[in-house]
Structure formats: C-alpha cells, structure tokens
Image (cartoon, rainbow, N blue to C red; front, side, top):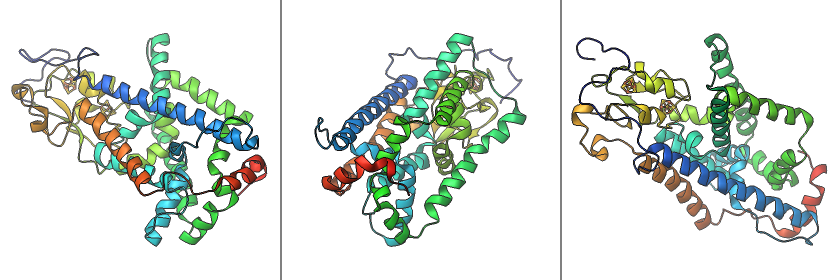
Length: 364
Ligand code: SF4
Ligand code: SF4
C-alpha cells in the first residue's frame, strides 16, 4: 500500500464501491442465490420423481409411472469416480452410470476454472448448509468460529474421508469396475442410495441432526470439515486461473472482505486467494467498499483510479458471467450425455421389475 497505512474503516476519499441493491443486475450475490435456488429446485424435482419411479417398480407397475430422472446420476459420485478410472484405462465410455462420470467431470472442470464454485453456486447441500448458517446468524446474532487448534485438525477430516473413497473407487481395475457396476447391486445403486435416506438408521439420523444443529452455529460445518466431494474439488481448484485478487494500493484496509468471508479466509492480507477453501462465492467482492479493488479475476484489479474500465477488460468475472459459466458447463455436459445416448442407464425395465422389489436383500 502506498504512503501511510490508513485507519481501519476509513474510506479513501473519492472511492466508490460497496454493496449493491439486491435487484441491481450487477449484484453477484443475487445471481448466486438465483443459481443456488434453481439447482435446489431441480434437485427436489429429481428426488420426488425418482421416488415415484422407484415406487412404480416396487408396486409391480400398479402406481403412477414417471420416467427416471437422469440427474439422479449426479448423486452417485463413487460410481462417477470408478467410471473415470474405467474410461482412463479402456478409452471407452462406461457401459452403465456414464452420466455420473460426466457430471463429476463437469464439476471438476468448474473447479479447474472457477475455484470451488460448485460448492457455493450449485450444490444443494451447500445451499441448505448456507441457509442454516443464515438462520443461526439471525437467531443468535452471529456465527461462531472454532479456535485454530481445533479448526485445523478438523479441516483434515474431509481429506481422510476422501482418501478412503478414492481408495475404494480407484483401486479396482477396469474389468472389476465393469463387473461391479453391471452386478445387481451396481444396477440399482441409485435405489440403494434412496433407501439409505428412506430407511434412515438411528445413528445416521442422529448424525444429520447434529450436523444441522452445528451448522446453525458454525457456518458450513459439513462442507468445511467433512465433505469429501468438496475436498476433491478443492484440490482441483488449486489450478484455477481465476482467483480472488486484491489491489493492495487501492485497498483501504477496512477488513470487510475477511470479516464477511464464509470460509474465514484473511482476504485483506492476501494479494491472491489460492487456498482450497475458497468457493468463489464472491461475498468478499460484494463487501469491498472500494471499486475495482477486489475481484474474481485473471489479473490484479486496476484499483479505484481505473474503475470505469469494463469488467472484461479487467479480466474479471461478474455475477452474471459466473452464472452463465457454471450453468453453461453443467447443461453442456447434460446435452453431451443426451447426444451420446448415455444420459439414461441402459438397464431394461424387466430387470428393474425383478431387482427393485428385492433391493433390501441385494448387497455388494
Ligand atoms: S475469499 Fe471471497 S470468494 Fe473465496 S470463499 Fe471467501 S468470500 Fe467467498
Ligand atoms: S480489499 Fe478488503 S480490506 Fe481492502 S478495501 Fe476491500 S474489503 Fe476493505
């Protein structure tokens, strides 16, 4: 920073910036929330239609028939990982649950380009977790942070879980993966996942309640400490060329960016945010009172002097651009899967009539 360090919260004369009204089209938070709610609605639709599809086979075709929603494959990340290994080893698209692989690849692509944007823009679990955090803040007046001596070891838990799942998914050779996913269990792996929630065990239920209550106090408790999916995407996000970048010369050291960051990143002390914990949520950018000082961009923002420059010339992403990119990558992948004829699983209905009523007895 040039010259004498300015007092905290003192705004540099002549600077503009700060929070935009929610209905201003440039407000990144509004675009993010709209994208999150769209994905939440899509996932609720997937859950409900999948339930009715399963019931149709459980009732031997006597209840209403609703086609299986292809998006359910997005809830099968282990099958997706196994199929990535299958495809890398054989060079072919997998014979079953190929859509789970393509969706996982799409989310990895988003992380390679836009940090962990999957977590804060698309993931319905992230959205619910954020809503609980907001509710906690309203009720208790604040969210809490764990002391560093506890926070740091807890942060490693998600990597332990990730290692376990990577071992399960990647240790099998392609032939074994094909054998497993084409087995009775593999064919109805999605039904088994639904049953996990439908017939939830008391231990799992207690865990869900505990983590939900914790999320009221500790923002994104599940995502921060336990989610192996987020851990995987975080590792890929280290390569992202887009990052939160700060112009130290125009920064007035108000600390608002760090104070509002849901991942507790000390943005006000960094020039670039490289950490795996950054979800590209742009909350810090929205909080910064000085225009063109903090941005999600390819290069350091020009600072308040140059804030008239269009965003594309600053190599900066706006909320609209983020929405278009994350949804564009997601829907282009779905389009490709439909085009390649792998969006729907190739299991014939007569197999489902045999397997789904016996799902409880089918193990791996
Ligand atoms: S650094 Fe900014 S974009 Fe990254 S998680 Fe924190 S608030 Fe969100
Ligand atoms: S970058 Fe952070 S500390 Fe600097 S002016 Fe913006 S909000 Fe304040």
